[in-house]
Image 1 (cartoon, rainbow, N blue to C red):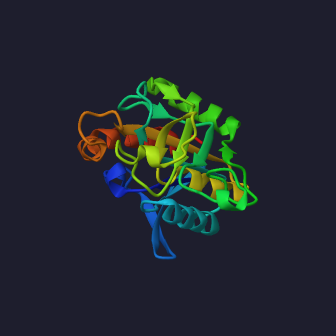
Image 2 (cartoon, one colour):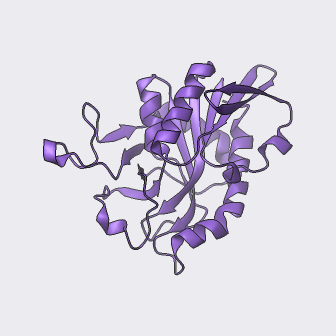
Length: 228
């Protein structure tokens, strides 16, 4: 069974209208939506925003369903000027941007007993790219960084963000860390909804762009749900 973690319902608003033959498993305060079609099965959970919410939802999905892979699809913000609205990011590396244990001798953004960067399953990325190829996405595999802060023009310089990172989100690295702890292959797919280089505040850009972004997320989910 393939598992999907989505942060917000407005990132995938028409899910239950388009995929109507589902069952619901209630677990740990979550609704887990389950689909079965021929020899394929899939489940989805809405996690809510942030690292802790994402980790809890991911672990609930792993504990409740016999998932073989987990895919996180959602929006992200650009922190490099050459990354544009609607670009699709499937990072090969994810890390955090808001962890500081340097007082104890750790590198910035490193948790004890864990690497600074988490590497994504390359075989699963390759498989997903092949499935998504007919959609003609412009896909980048550069680094994604995750933190509890919505990054904008005003606070960007307050964090020691990896120089190789091109986008930020609030869930990705926590989902990957949870999956690695459980030995479950995981891939993150993000669509750029805003940028710190926007003329408007990028929180306004996110609100304005989330509807068109949700159509790309829906298209991506629809392409993958019964093919992995």
